[in-house]
Image (cartoon, rainbow over all chains, first blue to last red; front, side):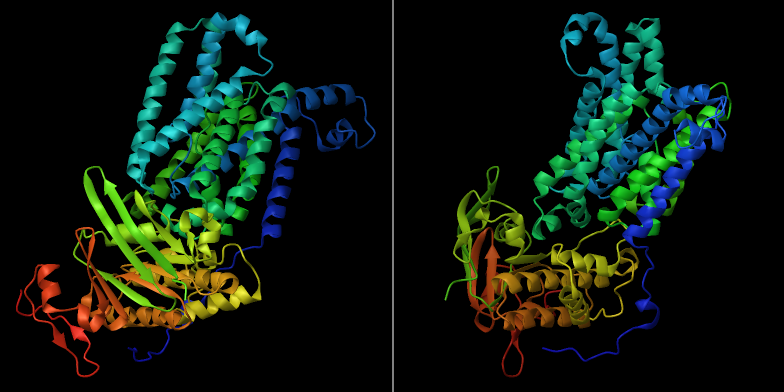
Length: 360
Length: 262
């Protein structure tokens, strides 16, 4: 049983894709993040020119403005810069990982209700704390990120159960299921708004729009463990997510412990989203824009895509936050508005270009 | 000689319905087996049990004398590979990246050469840098075949020849590539790999396999050499059609031409 040999097709078929190496890509992204951080440190209502920035950081001899610069830099600007970078990294990584889990580049934690789940849990904690003060005071940990983590975890598990059946994910069900979860949590948030007092109302509004305005070193320290867990789990799941892009059965056939992988991935998403939401509210579209841009340039392999997403997510959210706090200074735009204004048209464009992914 | 794959008394039920009813199959190294049968006969379910993906309610699958449930997924991947009917990929992965996934994270010049050989074996040399999403369905299927061949080669390097399970591997291929893919699979059998393929096309099955196992309603209805198994009676009893089986000139491979039935 043989086929007649036919001349092989060559020519344009052998054109290889030029993709940058891992070291180059991560190096460029790290430099970008550093550059954005330097720019962000200098601008704001109380500007710190570049030469005074070096002094305030203790790198050079300071002048007359040293004390004021140091105060602004260390207690206002740096915590916010660090927090924005951490939140951006977690949002972008959670997006990339979630897209790997659902095998589709259209999945985004903010879009499909996971962030809403976290925000609802966090807001419930605020309103209930009044009644639970004695209990909360006994706990050694900050309740807010833990509650947000649990809210994100429940939403992610629910979504997975809804959208995936015997190893296959329907992106239509995923998006619609996410819509339903977001609607439910929004109803819950509405109820909380009704129950809340004035101070609580202001705090809840902060979740609905997304803002990094309340950045402090305390908040940085609160979510640092979540960031470390998120980044620490990445090497464990990169190859599994690559194979998962072929399907759950195929990943198992190729040697991946799929159930274990999915559990790690879901915990990672919940940790990243829960921590990000607990300090910054719901910031959408970072998780969808960043991984998508990176896949075009460095390819979809998760070993590089995940750390690169962390770096670019950090840089871009920091840039967006810098815009949000300076464009209408001294007033501040909620950053969620900035990311949605950029991200929503991007998402629509993605949807139109990749209709096949949603079954059109 | 130890069987490469030994499925004993496999029973699987879904609610009240018995999908597989005490099905047994022993495949020796280097043997090529075609699983045939009408839709819903339990072929794909049986294949899923043999791959270790579906745990049977009763019975056991042994590979190299060990129950497959005792292997970790990574260890199992070095003993058997599976080629599914169709696999969709939504990310812009290149052909080379997908074929490399068969290597289970192994790197090096030997793996690179292995990938090149596998792509050549499925008539895709020169496609390594192409984006998978831009290929035709048949080309994509051949890429996955190359991936599975790399996986088998890695397993063979560590454990000796393994088992290859195929579920309708040719359904998206044109005639030439159907023949080429099955020829490439047959060459794997010549090296000692045991092959079990679910095939709908009885003519391809009769040409490809030394042994044909016909399934019907969750049981094995016939099991034997292709020349004896594909018969008028099998077509009538199992496939419920009345078509006489023809014979090629020697070696007398049976063929089925549904001319009178339509």
